[in-house]
Image 1 (cartoon, one colour):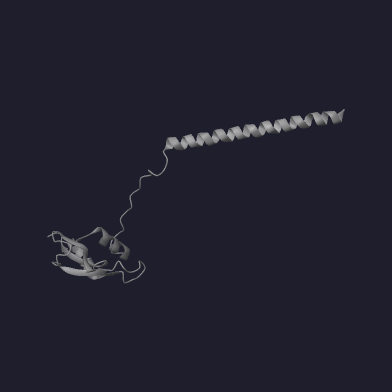
Image 2 (cartoon, rainbow, N blue to C red):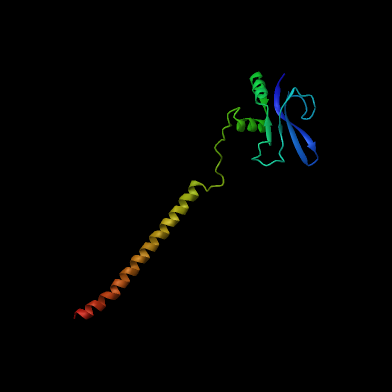
Length: 141
C-alpha cells in the first residue's frame, strides 16, 4: 500500500481548516478513510503564529520511516519544522533579463556616446584655449 501524508480539508465554507493525515494514495482527499491524523493546519492564522501548523513529530517520523511520501505542501511544513531537508530551488531562467547581444549593443552605444562627449569637451577646450591665445599674444606685444 502506497501511503501518503497529505492535507484533508475540514472547516466551513470560506473558512478552511486542514488535518494532516496519513492515508492510502488511492483514497480521495476527504474520504475519511485515514490511517492516522498527524497534525493540523489553519491557513486563516498569521504566518508567524505557532498554532498555524501543529505537527505530531514522533508519529510523522515513524510514518516517514515506513515509507510514507509527503505531499508538496506537507513537505514544506516538515522542512520548516526540520524533519526533512529543504528542497533545492532550481536556478531560475533569466527571461526577464536582456540577451547578451542586446546588452553588448547598449554598452557599445554608451561607449560611443561617452567618446563623442569626450571629443566635444576636447574641442570646446581647444576652442577656449584658442580664444584665449590671441588675447595673450596681443597683451605680450
